[in-house]
Amino acid sequence: MENAAQLFLLLALAPLVTGVIRTLKARLQTRRGPGILQPYCDLGKLFRKGMVVPETSSWIFAATPWVVFFSTVLAGLMIPMVAAEAPLGLFGGVLAVIYLLGLGRFFLALSGMDSGSSFGGLGSSREMTISALAEPAMMLAIFTVAIGAGSTGLTEIAGAAIGQHWRFLAPAQMFAFAALALVLIAETGRIPVDNPATHLELTMIHEAMILEYSGPYLALLEWAASIKQLVLMTLLINCFWPFGLQPTWFGFAALEGIGWLLAKLLLLSCAIVVLETVNAKMRLFRVPELLAVAFTLGSLALVSTFLF
Amino acid sequence: MLMTHVLDLQFGDRIVTLMAALVLVLQIAMVTQRWIVLHIRIFAAQSFFLAMIAATIAWYNHAPHLYVAAGLTLMVKVVLVPILFERLVKRMEIDEEIEPIVNVPLSVVIAGGLTLVGYVVAESFYKPGEPGLGHNALAVAISLFLIGFFTMINRRKALTQVLALLSLENGLFLAAISLTYGMPLIVELGIFFDVLVAAMVLGILVYRIRETFESVDVSRLRRLRG
Image 1: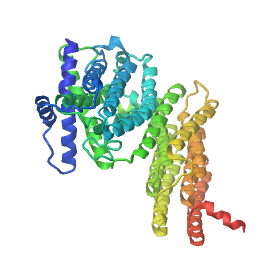
Image 2 (image 1 turned 180 degrees about the horizontal axis):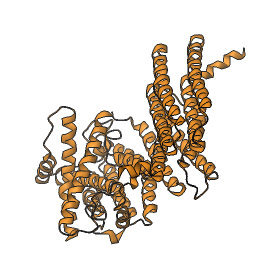
Image 3 (image 1 turned 60 degrees about the horizontal axis):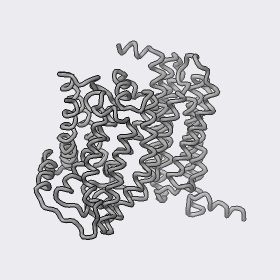
Image 4 (image 1 turned 90 degrees about the vertical axis):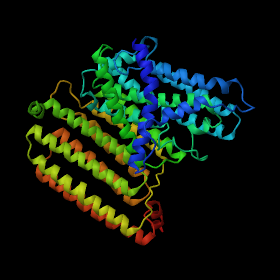
């Protein structure tokens, strides 16, 4: 029951979050922008279309959309969304979530090279550079939270956070939050690092890898990208602002939990929108500076849990 | 509810720790900064939080003379010095981009390492079980001091070195208020006057360096050797 509910929430909510971010961003830039339901229409359209497969590609090209989609959904089922108890929490903790997302990224990078286009290889190389720099920062931030809870299981982490509403004021938590927020921007391909709306050859990263995909495969990849964004955002808000996180899925508590989740997601989306609007995209060689800041903040967070 | 918080020493300690952490983050942000004007503004923000720490400590320890120190910090470091420096940048029409000697990612990691040194050094001053306010701030103060030194070494332009010196001085001020809850008022006044005079003198010096050498790059001063 909870599994089905969280699965539904993941699949249905992810395009909505993307749509809300796009619409808010358009409004902030005084454009009308597409409606918030536009990503659903896009997915529907892509699923109905035929697809073109490059002649040079191997089985990796066909397998990647499925691997990416299912590993992301699986990771999404391991995180606490509405209740502290994650449906597949028994199968693995936060490390499993991170490396399931890593598996998806690995296949995405492979398929970028597999299609034989030079842009694909370029995108893969950039993506792997950025993720190699983002991963240590992310791990340090996650370990900070895990030490506080005494476990790397997300159910335990979220459970320990419930009720301690002012805990995020502790310096270690703040450092870890800032580090994870920077990583979130890099991992979801948001503006200072990558531009999700661009198809300009010189700047795109994620879009370059999936350039050769079309039709249902493209739909799966786009859907997976928005689910990944939702998973990382949920991870961030439920580890650091556990307001309204319910101990279990049960009747009205679940509804209340969903309400809180939506409110917090909206708040985080607003923050992302403002950040994307006031910043210009960084040059690729400046991205390591941003991630070095994230790494330093993450290591400070870890150290200050022991010292404060 | 609010009143109990306002009087609770532990809550005060948390606030001071939080703001000290913010000060540290701003110091690291200064290391990464490439634009002089933004660097000056981050310095102003850092000094603002420092003033808030001083005011908080004054409130919880009933040390009214610290309010004067907080007010002076606000006036000198948040308002006067930034305005002075921004005008200097405009008047000299210097290149607004900072070129550090060590590249930015590495300097951030070094700054993180220096923070660790700061924490390890401060650890030996800390007595467990002793009730106090902002003893965590000492670690931050030592880190500010070390990172300030590092930034001075790492910069070529005289103006950014002066800014690093001032953030180093922020670290000294933080150490003073967190360890002793403030020095005697007359000493504080002297220090602030010093800072203001130093900022002005160094500002003039920077201007003169530029007049003579057509640049504020201090590595060109080697020519003086003759």
